[in-house]
Image 1: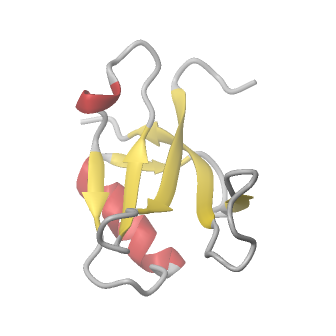
Image 2: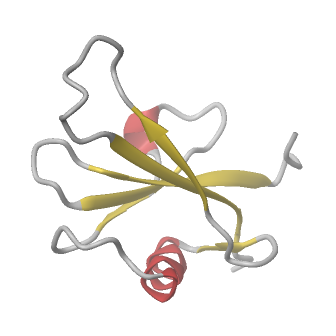
Length: 96
């Protein structure tokens, strides 16, 4: 369980463009209003790139910039098809 002032930062690929999208899931706020950053290109953003994106959104890591990765797929799909990858890390809002 995370502290009330921490949130999950999630990074995943956009299915339609292949670009990586990072967003901060804020509890009690509609997903359409979550802060987000879309990276240029289809290459997986480096940890430094992710840190810079979080800085631009006004967030920072709660501890080390360690990301956990999850592989997702739709059961029954063709196993030769690419899977979706999700990365997450805990962040907090930077005091202004």
